[in-house]
Length: 434
View 1 (cartoon, rainbow, N blue to C red):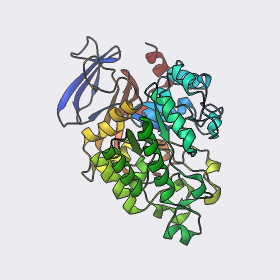
View 2: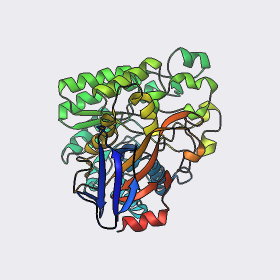
View 3: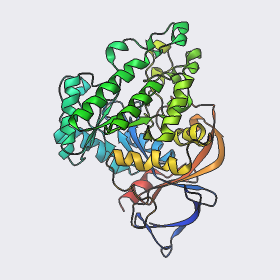
View 4: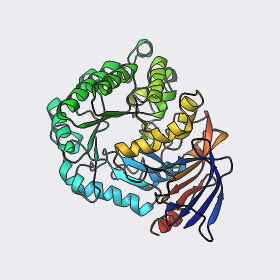
């Protein structure tokens, strides 16, 4: 397919026409190219999410690879890394290859499976890390997300193993014995609401241990969804020491605070929990100064009954793919802490680099894959159920006014979203097959 994207605004503020042919950027308009009028629209490289829960196989009532891919495309994403907490768990070559094949079949985004660190996420013995790395899926990111690899020796062995092929362990930092029954950030509000607290030190102590382990063995460590000012300081110290550590923050931890729990609305129940206002400001500053490397959604869909219940019975998690770019826009672009080139880095090129995903190092360069998001920075919208394209509606932003709107998404030169609407699945799949 040949496309001429006319009049786009690049992240540096310059205007440029972009030309696409056979899935890559080219230097001139191909004959007969379809014209997309991008006048006034921001052209971002396709977004990459290093932390997505697609739920399939096993939890298709919440999400599938298809519906999660559609949600991702609607949010401007062209690649997602699918977390391992499926059923069966993504702890063997066969399961990760199944997930990757589903993504390839549907074509909305590149789906890269994340392999489990431990068998069955049980934290007792290592999963088939080598087999997953050598499989057709070529897994390079491993995580027990939803569970912490809390055994220090097992964590050391995992770091040593992935080091042999340049992989990375992505740790869910939560000391389990400090968070038994935890429901909300530990502090005055948790006491006032009568909810068991989730202390910041439960996150910070695991990060401190793991950066020391990673430094000791010379391996790469990635820390998932950091949420406290103390975690920022540990990461900052580790980077200054030369530890090969990267970190992510979610959009919701950049914008929302624990105060939203006052109404016991379980849409705001998440792990790690929403924290204090001062934590939010520390996370924003850390993203701006590079201590935190990337934004990752932790998109966590749940069926209605898992959220429409008492707080202490509700599941943790929020959907976030469709809203992420707007939330980052609201939290750190409107404040002046990040510009659009920064956004391209923390939401596209840097997560691709951490995940060893090819095709994102030189966005818009001639010959590079045509992953592209067109975003209307001047738009505003009241976020609604109609904005969600996955199977679940547990968004914390419903009814909130958010800036910006994704107008078009192109994955390998194939439009998946045009004029703000998803392209039909059969058209995307046919185009992706070439």
